[in-house]
Amino acid sequence: MNENKFKLARTSLAITTVLTLFVAGFEVLMAASSYRPGMNIFDIATYATANVNVYCLILILLNLSLLPFAVLLYHQSGISLKKELAEKKTLVRDILFGLAALALTLVLALAYSFVYTAGRSELAFTDTDTSVGTTIMKIISLVFVSGICKEIYFRGFAKSLVGSVLGETKALLLVNIMFAMLDWYNFGFSFFAGLIWIFSYKRSGHLISSIIPHAGVNLAGIIYLIVMC
Image (tube, rainbow, N blue to C red; front, side, top):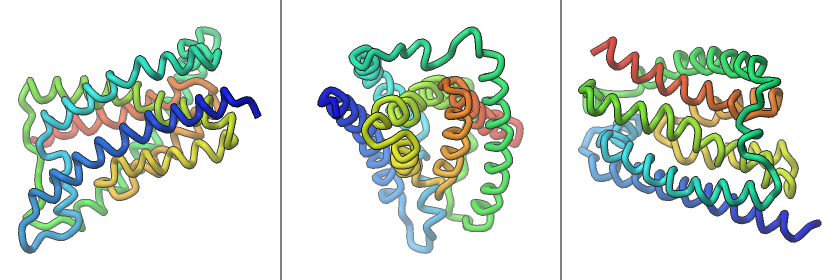
């Protein structure tokens, strides 16, 4: 097999691993440092992103700092990142795939909300910060930066670069485990949501079909917090 393919696959996995370990490490540190006697695992997990402005800032800086390397990797592989994201001739179809995936993801999120509610005690962290500054930070970080960049790293890399070595489906599933590790505090929601986004991406062939549900479910969470608070 072409040595260049191995090199591109290794580099793309290295980028995804750095993002996963750095963000997950920060989440574990925040959760562990907030532990108080009587907390259960659900309570502890709520503190992983409790310092929301710092968390969002880390996501923005880390994702954007890795983006130039992603662009370079696509260029070296001969794959157009622009076309990987979307193409005009299939845009409507791809958007419809994305909206269908978003609907399924929202149903999954609703089911998971019952698990979170049942598992948490009065010691859990509850996010009530709906200030304009924090809301804008969340939208930039979770909707735009994470919604686009993470899909490039966790879905695009897996299919286009790692998939050329391991096989497309195997690579997508392997990297999806890393995606779930990064969001460990939601107890598998990201893994199962990722499976939905993988299906949408594979059917459409363009990342916009996974960007829409990823960004959309994050935006729904922000809106829900504003409405409920």
